Length: 331
Image 1: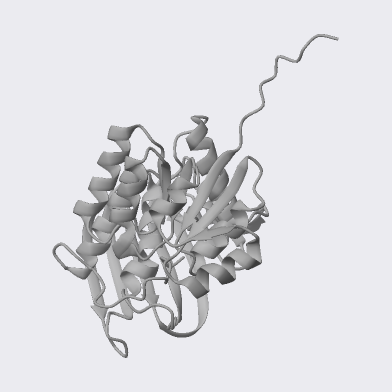
Image 2: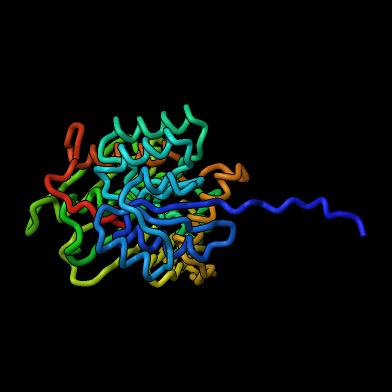
């Protein structure tokens, strides 16, 4: 019998930096993801890293440098946003591929520095806008493919999250939907008309954001931390149809075939079952192997944080005043 010519792909050795809520989930998925070896986690909080290491049965260290020394090929940066720049640059300088949680960085300058470093080093860089990989988002995207999009409305509301202490709703929540607007339209946001208010929190907890994209689509985002329940909905109006998606229940409905008497047809669209984070990390592995381009590029991440900062009208920085070190970037 002849020798097989098939070459098995070597598994990619991955580590996670920062194991708060989002970092733990990255580590959990990676520990059971085909094609990946979960090498270990790094977190300066000894209690937290020990707890996660015990749950997942992986090595735990205190610093990025120690995790790199374990022989990783790639790193997921799920530390607080204000640490993304330094941690990502250290990983890139060591020649490691990097997935940086959203937002990519707290300032445009720091975000652009990460992108430039990854390009100079020739490593894969992906940004963790996980909502892109929600099967309901994919169903909406498929439903409007080839259509002339007229408007997009997104609602992302819920109660105040106790773990968030360093940013408001624009950076925590709306940045997801800023990215989705660009994803749906295939365009960038050119005009911003924000209304934000700190009603009961130290930072803005209500934001009503209006946009116009470069290709002429009108869009708005309604987000707050005042609603006692979570809601995540998308509505897209095109020339020929109206598509609604619930990103929590993953139900997508399409209205079409409008008649002069005001009647129309309606149908529920099929939505695949998938864990968004698992899809995201699979795409990261594909980007590392050069099989596909990064699904969410560094430039996508820069565009999202740039628009979010414009909404806040804060020139330069949204750095936290006193953020606990182990809190992961919000998902």
